[in-house]
Length: 394
Image 1 (cartoon, one colour):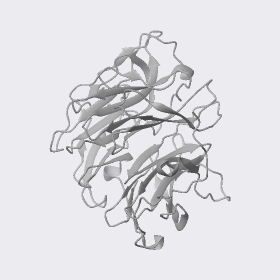
Image 2 (cartoon, one colour):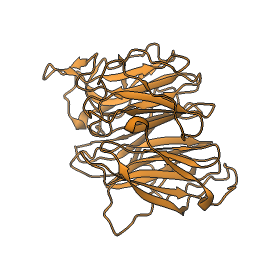
Image 3 (cartoon, one colour):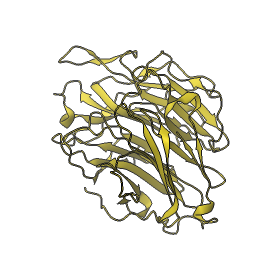
Image 4 (cartoon, helix red, strand yellow):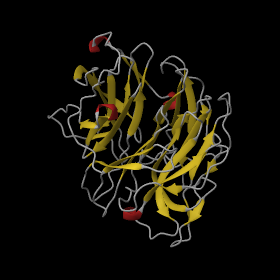
């Protein structure tokens, strides 16, 4: 099933409230990641607390995962707590293999990340090389969020784990961790890679063995991230980049309505490229709206499922080439959406941060900008504050 590719509107279709301020009056605040960290990812608990994980900046190939929280919309954060129980068991290289976070209905924090070459325990051995595979690691906080359990590897029947995994928790406390890899008994290769899902029905105490949830015919882009998200109605939303015939690097959108048992969906956005573009994507919810954003061919795109899966790139400056990557977005209580992305970031190269605010009708406003200072291997995160403003963390 091919989802329609129409003009982007971000219309609320009468589901949201009125706009109480002009876009020019919407404050956008920029905050640096604590400790000079990189790759921020956010989770919002029911009381509005922002929970964030990020990676230590150095060394890139053997990083650590840190957790902080904010009760003032991301303006200030608590003291950092290390998540990974083994030193250097995370990886920052490539920008897309870092930690992801989800917050359960009880406030417990769940984190998953791709393990580094030194991370333990290892995954199953590659049958062709005999080398133990890279793990997909998981940890959860104690009930008070003051410490994290020892990291665990969720990989049991897949190998060649690469790209970035993702995590989600639904309203019933079920935990889901997704990644893409080869079946340990399969031939291997991007064109046969699949997306796999490990599920926990007891809040992360134990996980079922991972099961393939993507079509075997699409493949999976080896060094691209994917994104998993649980909406308020307990639907699981998944975005991943395919690698069919190694040249069809299309974005696919899948949805599960039965707790990850089955998924349905199809191609969202096509891209033919005989290379791995090392991309990431994001999904967020605001009221009944499910917002998604991703990169295709050097540009970033956004989609509002509530408005019918419309897709459009934000306005571009024609005076410079498009080098947009790693888009993230959030919507405030007044229906305005802030989309942020990096400009000029690449392998071993930092860049700039760019943003565009859309009004409640989905139209771009004059609230936009560009600032330098995105470190190597990093990107930004964005959160809507209770006062209607936005905090961008980079």
